[in-house]
Amino acid sequence: MVGRVLLDRRHRTSPAKPGPPDEPPRRVPPPPPRWQRWLVPLLLLATVLLLWLPGLVSTKASSVPYSEFVTKVDAGDVKSVTINDKGAVDGTYTDGSDFTTQVPTAIDTAGLNAGLEAHKVEVTATQSSTSFVSVLLGWLPLILIVGLFVWMGRQAQRSLAGGLGGFGRARAQIIEAERPTTRFTDVAGYEGVKQEVSEVVDFLRDPERYRAAGAKGPRGVIMVGPPGTGKTLLARAVAGEAAVPFLSITGSAFIEMFVGVGASRVRDLFDDARKRAPSIVFIDELDAVGSRRGGAVIGGNDEREQTLNQLLAELDGFDPNVGIVVLGATNRPEALDPALLRPGRFDRQVTVPLPNQAEREAILTVHALGKRPGDDVELGRVARGTPGFSGADLANLVNEAAINAVRDGRTTITAADLDTARDRTLLGRRETSNALLPDERRAVAVHESGHALLAALCEHADPVAKVTILPSGMALGVTEQLPEAERHLYSEDYLLDLLTVRLGGRAAELVVFGQGSTGAANDLAGATQIAVRMVREFGLSSRVGPVGYGTGQPQYLGESPDDLLRKPYSEQTQRLIDQEVARLLTDAEHRAVDLLRLHRGALDRLAARLQELETVDGAVVEGVLRDERLASGTPVRRPR
Image (cartoon, rainbow, N blue to C red; front, top):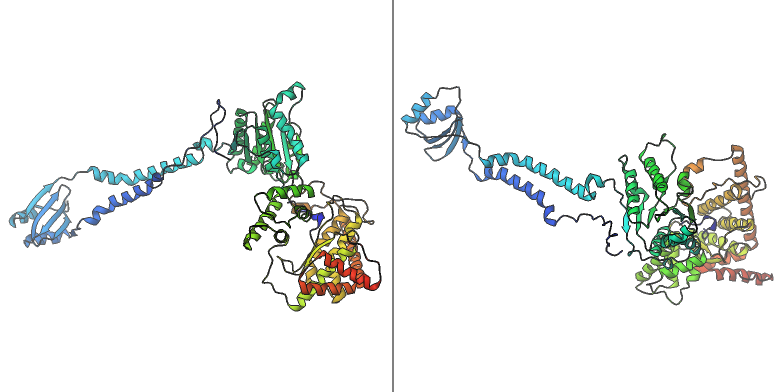
């Protein structure tokens, strides 16, 4: 496995202050006191106690049939009875026990009255009445249920910041003029991008200059680029430099399952911006709401398209002299609707690319603040060894190095910590428990020696920085190459050498063992991808000719499956492309095998050194080749 392929580069507040005097800030209701959270559970508990406690504390009398009651009366076992107007009887036996019964309304009770008088039973008559407590107990469950719904409705209103009317309001984070502290000086590198967006700052600071010249300031600026390149940070720097209110919202915040909510939030957002003008509206991840219309939905009736239509109308509707500038950021400019990008809406499209070597060094310097780098740390060398890293990748690199220092019980970051963090970022965690068998260890050493020697032998290949046979992530061994300078164009010679180095591991296995292995699977996949682009996009095949079948649009997030399925050429052309790709790979493998056979002694010595030391740097590779040439009497190759 070789180092990073440059053709496949990784795209990688203080308290709120009130608004202007004419528009008081919208206040979100404070959270309810803690005691209100327990109100409903306490009411439910009280209801249960009121309903069940009287029955639990009272002594329950036994219920007896009416016939048994008459028999007891005739036997003289009844002491007293209480009869109400509904025929319910509560009585006491002569032994002191209580009973209850019910007198049937269809039976003549004259005999019962005579028996009660004959045995001198104490009879008491009562009239039944409905007490306030019983009425309250009967209605209390219903009252509590209604109260529970009212309480839940108020909680929903509070969470929606104003009830059902606030459900359609824009959920934008409003940062007033005094709060933005980010400036252009806080953004390392990207001088060209900062110059592009600085005109927005000039327009918001002094719009009269533009009016005097009859010029109109930019209405909208959209920043496009790979993830992690600092588009949101640049937008905050614009707000900080202009010292105006900054309304920040993401594109996904407009989209809801309810029809019309997104359009309502767009209207509300621009209403807030007009009230706070001059101001900046920043919409992050613009592709979430601004994707192309059409496709499966015909007529534009879905919620997302209605939201986009409202956004287009708002961008056309405000007066350019009011002082409202809309900033957008996206990783997918190819997915945006063309109507959104026309002049008069988003007037400018600013590309925020991956940082170059000088910008990476400046970014590393910013992220190294607050940390303690050692004397052996050279940020320029780290920047040279991280091509294709974004600003977020570099921040993660420095943080991983600091974590590695803490893991070793140190507070100072060394160069070894940065190298370990780079390997972990590119390859994954070092697998110390993944012990190789002796035969596997020798095979990996031979494989990586083939990569390293061919990188040193090929004239246009990048120099070797480090070779290791310690497993990391999915790789059993790694050969890292560091470019001497930042490349922007790649010649055909460079690409052919790159293919040769890629296939160097497999070629070394063929030379030493006479057969290949599964260890070259990743190398073959990477080499095939490079060869396909050489034939299909770069026009570097004599048989296919100067024809390019690229997408023509930046793919910061990689090609989608639909792009891979849609081919702008015929099956016959695809067959020709396949043949040319196979030819390029076969020629590169033959060249690699011939070079390694010519330098078989250096290959064996380097593989032995790798088995002994496990990790060597590029100087060891150059030394092995130098020793071989001195022994054979050939001129010593000048190290690069």
